[in-house]
Image (cartoon, rainbow, N blue to C red; front, side):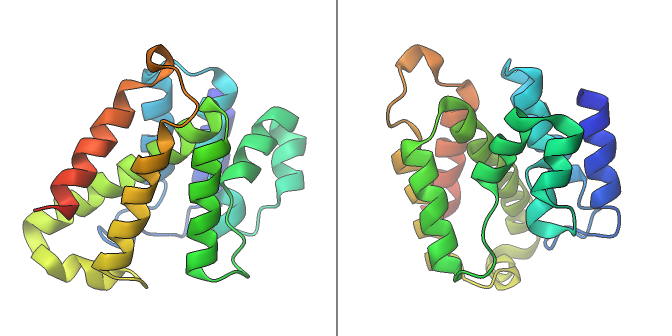
Length: 180
């Protein structure tokens, strides 16, 4: 399933580029999947990591994900997929709600996604400085609100021993980027 999900996501994102680095977009879902795999998550969660942006950012539908990878993967992808008909604030508030109320696996995919995004921002800050915030529809203040809200809610309902170590890495990176 790992290889199939990787190939599927790479094909779906083949024409896309990352907004900050300009590198092929697939580098992002690959990084998210590797974070999840390295943290020891099961194959379906890692597959959902590869596929987490496919429905949101490509013509691929959730039904196609379900047909190719099953209900479990499709439900994990669905929990991470934003409804683009809503405003940015509504979409981000929904993600924060999922981080607060979701399962460990749902939270894990979201935090791995946000960690990789912040790692790209950190890299861009080192070369471009605060100009990096111009890449976003919402600038520094709302990016700070969003990421700090993820941190404030990601531990809710989890036992200390089940929290992946990369959650703390995300928290520390968030502090570094937004409290410089």
